[in-house]
Length: 69
Image (cartoon, rainbow, N blue to C red; front, side, top):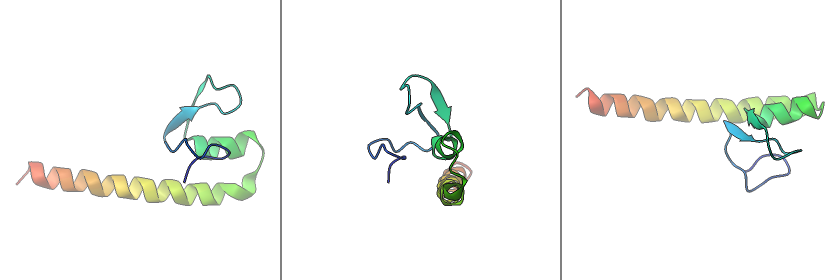
């Protein structure tokens, strides 16, 4: 699953501005909805970010467990 109108862009943490292609956007999924004034899609993106952060937390917990045993 990619970002809005950019299926090839899958980084949820940072992405080029889809309008100019130049500026960096942090949390681009939510930022796009804010910039395009489409609040109805924000909950979907919040859920995607929650899943991604939960997955990252699991990876960090596994790495910590391996390093401290």
